[in-house]
Length: 297
Image 1 (cartoon, helix red, strand yellow):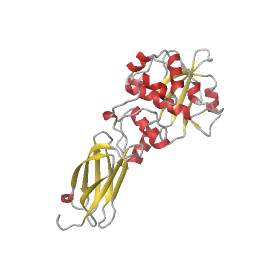
Image 2: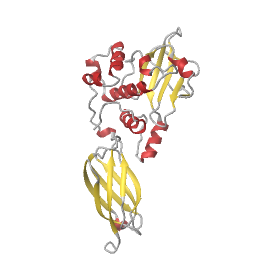
Image 3: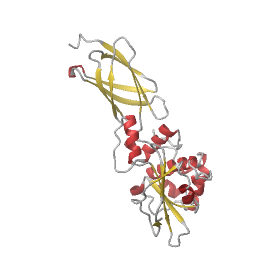
């Protein structure tokens, strides 16, 4: 039967979060839904432009599940119904696989050139995180800080002030791999009240599962607020000292619901107990057009 079926070419365009065809080695398998003997595997080296896969079974044997396995990007699967005598196109967007990432532009010497660099350096100086301490941080902790910095430039309180200008440092106590998805920071006293008065931008959510280092105590009620992005939303959960005059915030990006939205939308397989900062990097660029200004590939 394999000699009797209609066949057609399929153009494949695999893109990164910047919308550009990536460079990578990819295994592409067409698992034919009508006749398993018509299934095919292609090993393709993408070099920044689309590739054409020849002689793929077409209608009425054109329905196939396509498994796309790049080397450095997340795996995904899709369905295609290949037609004969027509254009067949697979155009898909991919996140970098965190386990294959090779981060660059996140050393201390790279910070001044970033659009948020002056504010981040102010925060690090207040936290007494110098060049040596920064470069000794795990790269995922650095990625989280860079992701948050870029997001906090965009997001404001009700008075129009960028969140990043109201962050006064970073507590180093939990700046480790067990808390790689968040930072804990002293913040200006008016931030909490301003978010409470800004329901058009921030949802009032539960902060019950958030814990704080040292002697900081969670604010009693209405203490946690999250932007309304479908993915890549920032959440701030507040605590105070014993006197109730100084404020401290647990600041993180995204939650499992947002990651699930991204995974469903892109057909990626994204799992894990905690959100990976490298996924957040990709989400910010892809869904919000916010570039944290470091690279993963």
